[in-house]
Image: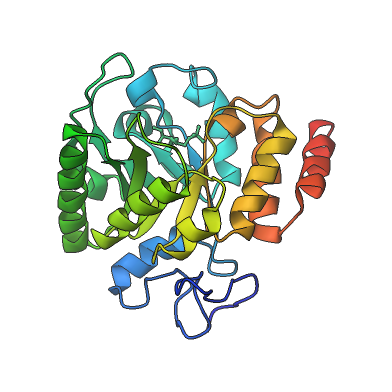
Amino acid sequence: MPDMDGFREANSFGFGQASLSDNFHVKGASNMPWGMKDRLSRIFNPKTGRAVMLAFDHGFIMGPTSGLERIDLTIVPLTQYADCLMCTRGILQTSIPANVNKPICLRSDAGSTILTELNRNLLIDVEDAIRFNASAMAVMFSAGDGEQEAITAANLVKAVDLGNRYGIPVMGVTAVGKQMARDARYFALASRVCAENGASIVKTYYCDGFEKVAASCPVPVVIAGGKKLPEKEALELCYNAINDGAAGVDMGRNVFQSDSPAAMIQAVHAVVHEGLTPEQGFELYQSLLHS
Ligand code: R5P
């Protein structure tokens, strides 16, 4: 039995974090094959069941956005503090030394940039995920987004089919149509659809009523950080998400656009894995600024 400290019990919605009846520390993964479990265990710490994923895949739609102009200078020094790195194959190949030895969640779809309205994403070749020794493949599912919904659902299903063939879990990256409220109803729908289609991890956003989003999704949910917030608010976001059932964060801008990205990712890590309150996390952040 793994150390179950810090796990939430199954709750009234029927799905919690891994419950005591599970024999594996990742929610919904008890019946998976060995290779899948091995990869998930590289992402989700067996002691806490949680993960801090460092997301820096933004460039594939945004170009060199603030904080990501020089991956070698801003991101590489942070890799030591992350449980998993989420990025595209282009950045992995060119800018991340292979000996950082971190699990990779490979952004495995590609499409239009922020300059184009309709996004016709397609999948990269699963063989590249194998070549890069990816621990997971991240693929977007865009709910309620017209034609884009069908395109991204097809990508997700194909990625899961291929991932199952080679033992590589898929992380469903949820999006909702522009006209839709970014609320628990739609995030829960998008998250559940990802899991129903075979995603082993879901990335979504924190919102009011998030506990329903997490509880009604039978696989671990990690939250994106979204636009840059003041550091203390970003730590509150992490704390609330974990408290409401998230299994971790997949955070980008609130780390790499921080005044001190290294201090921030360490504070996020402590909130996620050690249960620091936002106040304690912020104290840690400030103390690391001067260390
Ligand atoms: C966006 O396309 C990406 O999936 C990001 O990885 C994700 O939104 C997390 O980054 P952030 O914390 O900056 O929202």
